[in-house]
Length: 267
Image 1 (tube, rainbow, N blue to C red):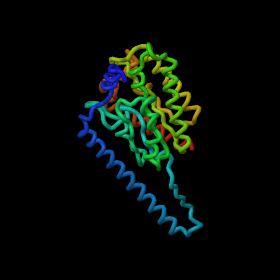
Image 2 (tube, rainbow, N blue to C red):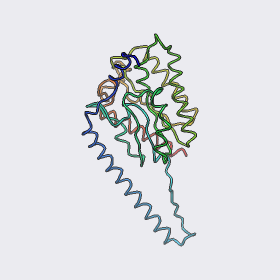
Image 3 (cartoon, one colour):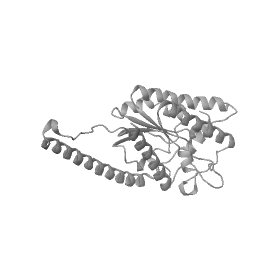
């Protein structure tokens, strides 16, 4: 890696300075999970008691033991990783629907060199998962230089990373949830050419998700500014021009959960 690329990667990686806040947020997250588990146990015990009292074969009670997308893992970059810059927040801290959520997102990760390359290792660490959230791409664009790689070739490399992970997920019986690239037009390394590639990638990802039966979350449209420069994160969601603040993280988490509910209801 050249010194220039190494410096850019350093700039896009997040620090660990906000670990105390993350731990408080994760503690609240764990409390919610415990409450959900307690409720599920209560429902299950009630159903078992009704079945026992209902005369066996004459009972109308049905136990549903498998809820789709109840155990997920995440691969991605600092948009998804628990370790974030001070002042920024991650949607993964606010997801309550999955009973199990293993987060393997790494700040500064590239789709091509990092996320896709480690996908099978991450999947091996979450053998009970029935779904995966795949997020990333902005770091690939930040480190892309058209002088050395054409726009078409860069897009093709990112597409190949996605299709590779899709094939691996399908072979494991995993349902895929894709989150597209968030608006990042306010970041100092943004250019109009990189914006064009952002739009090309997001459009392709939406089409690919539809073709493969995956779940697609359009974070770009959800979080972008509606007035002024629409390539930027909306002011109410923006932490540092690249990452979301708390409201942005909560808004994206709600959108992911809505997508999970819609998928469950479609089955």
